[in-house]
Length: 334
Image (tube, rainbow, N blue to C red; front, side, top):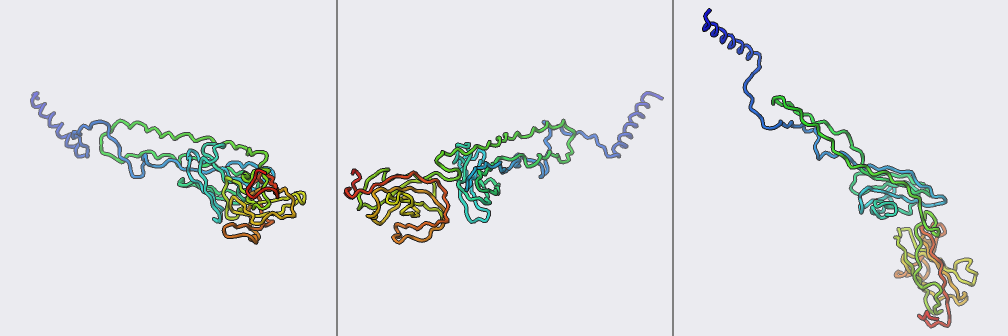
């Protein structure tokens, strides 16, 4: 066979082979060159940066036992949320109050307290965090609650590329997981450090203001007493005023009254049969008054005490007041 005929037969064979291969569905058509590495597309269920990976969680820490305490305290931490309102309410919704994160910096920059509270079941809920905690509180306990960012709510889904007809490409670089901020350590319970004069479990005592201790006033002067207190009264809370006199050796108060304001205006002159020395003090109590006193007015409401009341603050200091018949009304220099 001549060389020319051989080349003709060889080319014919290649054409036939190409047709057979095309019949199998494989094409060797040229593919356009792509710039860069193809980026896979993700199905709607795939992870995105906007997907939340953590939530707030609440934990009840070990309570602190207060020996001999009759009331209780609830101490709360909300990590990093200074100034955030936190609501406490009884489980039945009959009572609620609000305090703010950071109100108790002695226990940490993000601490607050509700005190004093009755033993019972309470719900504590920071505003806007989507989390709350129900706490069963016994008498003489400092309940402790921590709100903090939680662990990831689940493993991040692995991005699954949809099928693509692009030619094989080098594998995409492994996506590094987002590094979550470290979770702050749980606070170490701090024992209550109240001054020795304040019984554990009670609020701070009112502070007497006027008349100053040992003041002498005219027998014709009305006994107007004044004090201050940093707390706020609830609907069933009152200031209890107790007044003693020397005629009975200060054994029993000659007057006990409940008021809602920071002054006590006694609208009767001192009894002439009483001794010249009076003593008085103030405390905060909780209860239902027996009735209004006979001389109570709409501008100066005063109630009779109820023996079933309970104290919610320590008692103030006891100050002395001298009634001197020789003192002109309004003159305290005598």
